[in-house]
Structures are given as C-alpha cells and as structure tokens.
Amino acid sequence: MLLYTRRAQRIAWAVFAFFFGLLFVLPFGVLVLAAFTRQWNGAFPSSYTFSNVTAAFHKDPLDGLETSLITALLSSLIALAVGTWAALALDAMRHRAGKTLIQTVFMLPIAVPSVVVGLALLVAFSQGPVLLNGTNTIVVMAHSILVTAYAFQQLSAAITRLDPAYEQAAASLGARPYYTLLRVKLPLLLPALTGSLALCFALSMGELGATAMVYSANWTTVPLRIYALDDRGHQFVAAAVTAVMMTITLAVLLVISRIRTRANYR
Image (cartoon, rainbow, N blue to C red; front, side, top):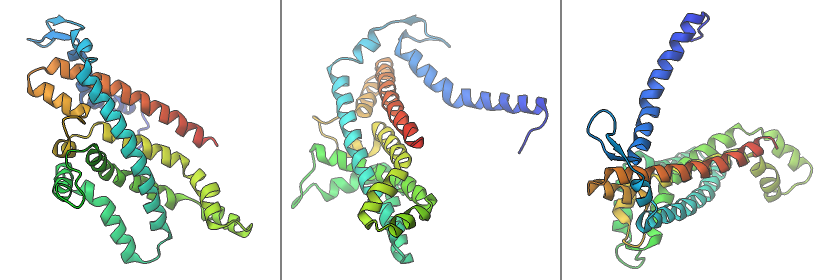
C-alpha cells in the first residue's frame, strides 16, 4: 500500500526499524557482544575479555573453519553444476510429467528436515558396495544434496525470464546448440549463477542437521564445533567462533557479490 503523507511514512519507517532491530540487529549484536564477554550476570556484561576471540583462533576452531570452507566450496560448485544442468534440461523438456518428476526430485531435500537427508545417506552408504560412512565425501554429498535444490530453483526462474529471441538470433546465424549455450545462454545467466553460488555457499557454511548425522572426527565443520562448545558450557567462546565464521562468510559473499555486479553490467 502506498503512503502519501509524511506522517504515515514516518510511522511505517518506525515500525520497520523496530522489527528490523528486534529480529536482526539485536540477536547478532548480542552475539558479537558475547564474543568479548567474560561474565554476564545482568542486562549487560559485567566484564569483558579478548580471550574468547583468541580461543576462536586455536587449532580446533581453525580446523573446523577450514573444513567448512572446503565443504562449502565443493558442495556449492557441485550444486551449481547439477542445478544448472537440471534447470536447462527442465527448460528443454516438453513432457509435463517429466518436468513434474524433475522438480519433485530436486525439491524433495528441502521438503524434509535436513536430519532426514543425513540419515538417508547414513543408511544408504554404511554398507557395501559403496561404503562412505566416516569419510569426508559423505559430508560433501550431504551438503550438495541440500543446496542443489536452491541452485535449481533460482536458475529455473532465471531461465524462464530469458528472452528466447537471443537463442533464435544465434540459431538463425548458424550457431550450433552447444555454441549457443556456451556463448549466449550461460553468459546471460551469469548473474543468476553467481547469486546461486553465493546462496549455496552461505547455506552450506551454516548447515548442521545433516552434518551431525554423517560427520567424522577428522572432518568436523564449524557449526558442529560451535554446538559442542555451547553444550560444554563455553557459550562465550562459541559466540566468538560464530562471529569469526560470520565475518569470513560475509567476506566471501561480498567478493561473489562484486562478481555478480560486474556480470550485471556486461
């Protein structure tokens, strides 16, 4: 609804600022504050320290961060490749039942709790002929399955918005289908591809449910280490590790955003 009076606009902005601060600024602000807290007995911390941040850079948190970054990068690239292929196949398919089947298969992992995906992988690959239980591969596989649905959904929407005149013009000039795909269609989809990559990376960095079902001792992600710290009563150290993870994730997302911005101006 459009607001034409200045008073109504101010009220709308005040309501927006209240809920934005309550739902977004306050939780993350408290988290950052807790990262520098030694003791918290009242409404505000009673003493501060840098030891929590220092502990966040010890071996275990850094190993978890490295594991999360590798897992997120690999699963995001896999999800982007599979999601793009599936979205292109869906666009080329003319059989309605086939389209419905593809959409159902790729959307199923986000229709159930992530723990179910982890349990399904654990049951499927705990025995031969393919034994993956306790390996790094099963963790990457779990993340890939979960984030592929988002890549598929974003790219399917982007493909439907493409003007078919570009492909028709390329075909009229004698371009082969693979050349049209590589030199016309994919460059037009570059903003959607980078956006999907950023979304998949962020989701993978914060994934916990499926990872808890399939992780091994030598491949433990940051969310699992944060959960373990909180479970042992080290909430302030967990807050510091979370703040470090958020900072690194945001930095990666900003880099991807810059690439996306340049792609939009091509």
